[in-house]
Length: 466
Image 1 (spheres, helix red, strand yellow):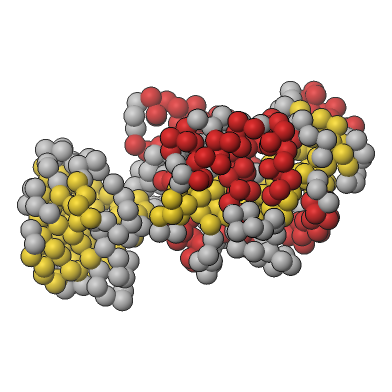
Image 2 (image 1 turned 30 degrees about the vertical axis):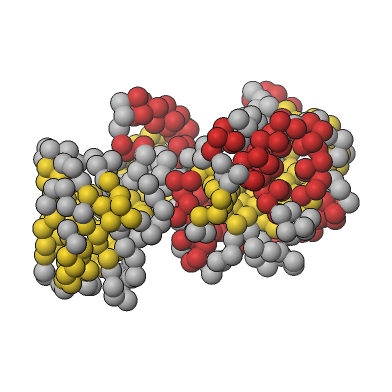
């Protein structure tokens, strides 16, 4: 069995914690591990489980690789989508990749950003589903509903409370319809989790969505391996229709069954659902960070960088990050996407990146910025290097805070220790390398007429970036 981890979401419903370049699946919301890592942890002990296939946005590839490495998973197949095409193409690609060595494994399809509280119950459902998948069926996991939720699609089963054929997939209902679904006992929430043999999915795609399958075959065959990644051919993938696996296959096939799952599942699709999933204090508050409150109940309050105080409010969401603060009632917080849309129209960078930006060599924190200057705290991992690059519009001053820095500038190489500095003039080719065994930290002061990240011309890069 191979777990297929779908990790292409942008997570805007949890802004400002979740952003385009670091969405919620790569954030530690419930402990030390990220949601992506928790998803892998849940299946690592299942008998016969092999190394995963991860389907992700190309922009997230180094975060995926790093978080897999933290779990000592170094042989995963990381497939990079040049652009999103929904779940049907992603699963077609995964099935084709899993069969490339002549095998025909069972694929367990999981979203990277879900919570499952009772792992043992989940494992029981996996065992039931595996038997069905081995017999050539397409299995989906239906969540036993705990409320008439209008935010989920539903699956209507032919038989109540047990493994069943599927009668219908239905769209997100209004509240009255959702109440009727839950009262009937015939309906489950559609979890978006599946299990099937790779060959079964390929066969059903041939019947119902041959254009998707053909485009995915072409994109994979014309693709290439790049470091730890499988890159699809962009031109071939561009011709692939965008469709969900529900529309492309599951609603048409006569091979689909649903396995009920009652294991404390949530897709953490809103601030309210994050509050519900987290541990509460005596006043039913969820508190994270440096927080002082008085007369506050049933609220979610998150601080990342500074003291946050809240007085005399109930049912609120307060989220502080280095560059943004979000305050809302819990009820209205589900509409945060409208705030993100407004920010996007204004081309505000706060929807794209956190102030702390991760790179394959480490990370940087943009700690101050003015009209003609910018200050960054840069951390370079042991043995890592920035690209050999130059800038047309800015000069840079580097001061070493901790560690050792090997600096290449205009063909000359120097070694700097703590409290030493150097100057990189405009237009000079330069590179920063950490030759040591501990992280290198420098303060970079940029000055010039233009300080954008796109003022980088690369001449050589260990990570194959343009």
